[in-house]
Length: 111
Ligand code: FES
Image (cartoon, rainbow, N blue to C red; front, side, top):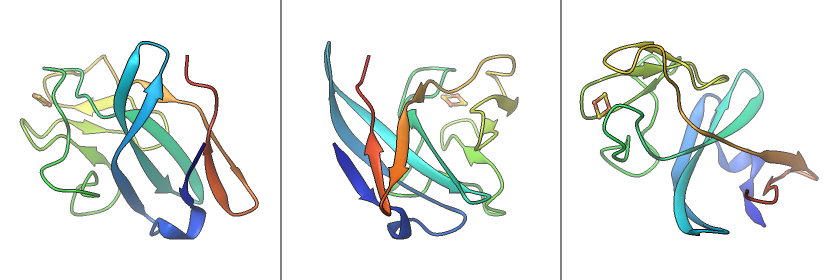
């Protein structure tokens, strides 16, 4: 499944939420482009399992260096999803496998 073009994401930037079909039903994910790489995560903060964003495509903090939860401001490393500050310290975002091919970001087989 093609999620979007690589150049549809700013550097740094994010896109989402995007609804994708998993074997257990539809779930929302988001994409992050940072340091020339792309990652995808479930759109669920590990603190309360609520969506991270307050508005579409706004997943990064003001500096563009960390993913931020809009509810209690937890911060996450954009490339690992690890919580680096906030109430979910020691936990992290759930990664979703994506690849980049021919300028497109593709969802790998959802597990
Ligand atoms: S719900 Fe995300 S930090 Fe509390």
